[in-house]
Image (cartoon, rainbow, N blue to C red):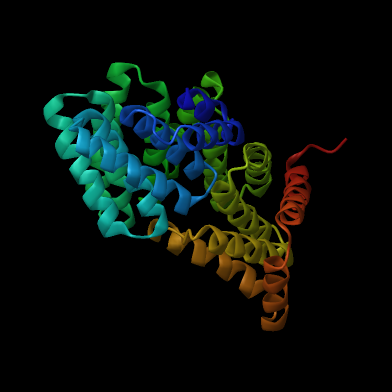
Length: 329
């Protein structure tokens, strides 16, 4: 049931049901408790509540391990690894994903193997091993195509797209991401659609097409606001900040960077190493367009913004930039 909630973006509803079920049935059969904890961990991770996600998934892993259920243990280990990676502990995340893969391959479950491959690739990518990351992502995507796992395929194609961009091949990146976007729209997956839109926005911003980038980012942010996905909102604010800085709104860009930084701190979610260089370059654009005093003042103002105000600020400037690409009437 929680998978339906996750794909449809009903995070708040799912969390409420799962938390109430766990609280009302503390002595529930162990298997049912492990399943509910697994669902809760994945849902709250989507909301950006990393501490709660880790707590739920750690308990679920412990239960599956005690029950000797290799399929569920492998799947939950990989999910926990993704949470730990987002928290910044790459070594533990790698160990969790590698354990998941070592369990999943012998039992021949292609869905879990493909997921573990995808998730391990992300950790290796953050550690700088782009070649191995690409090979694992390609293997993951191939398995998902073969089994008809469209949700999973979209995840792997999305990651291949960003990896291609990091490797200096924006055309290949766009091909991957446009296929991802088409799959997510067909599935009615708002979180996946927002991810694809946001990643495409980053590519177009880098090519100088700031109007297209702003329009894509605005659509992504609206979806994420509806979902309540605060972790992805932080990414989105950074992306619009970068586009605003390139489009001549460096003061707004610095303000949004500040707002995103504060949100990341609240979520205990540092910028992934794989994104740090691109992030630093975007911040440098805003910094170079302003005096040191102006930059510092704008950044501090962003850190003091309420989240709703930061979202309104981001959507307003994105709309202004998107209008630059519209034909005159």
